[in-house]
Length: 213
Image 1 (cartoon, rainbow, N blue to C red):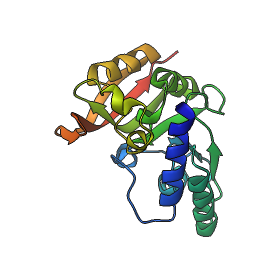
Image 2: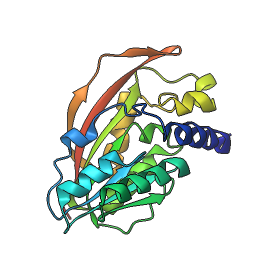
Image 3: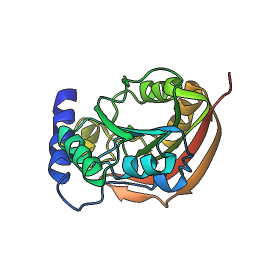
Image 4: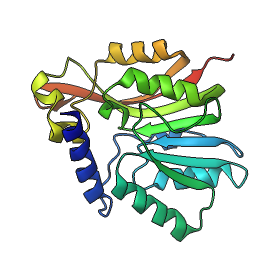
């Protein structure tokens, strides 16, 4: 069932890679405040627009890395970066639960409506914490549910690909952040609940810092 879900996500976003559809549930990049020389990572980087923007903001002494599970999106992102002459951006294919990056070398992690897809969200937050440098930060836009998502949606590939079936409740989400070790959490944006299937969900953007060693 997990492979079916990943296949559905890959197919959907591979097709959308060549469209003009907006895939984001939020604007994490607008709150990222990347600084010159920083190393930045975008989880679920899609066509690479945010990675390219980060690469420009951090300048030649910095680096921006996009990570995505969709081969179609990654290829499109690489073409976009090459077309614009952005040389300090790179793109990797990986699931979020096991990031192909060393520990403590990243200053900023951003993500838009991607972590809710992960089968083990605690593992994702643990990985984000691992790769961040001391005093590193994340800015994540995502979705949480106001009630537990019914089982009929949890394992339905199309619903998962539509960005809400994998959501968890607000308290669960915040507990996962705390368990990973994040501090100084700030909610930057939070929508009103809106209906999806038999439940309601909320879009939000949240920022947190890794505790200093």
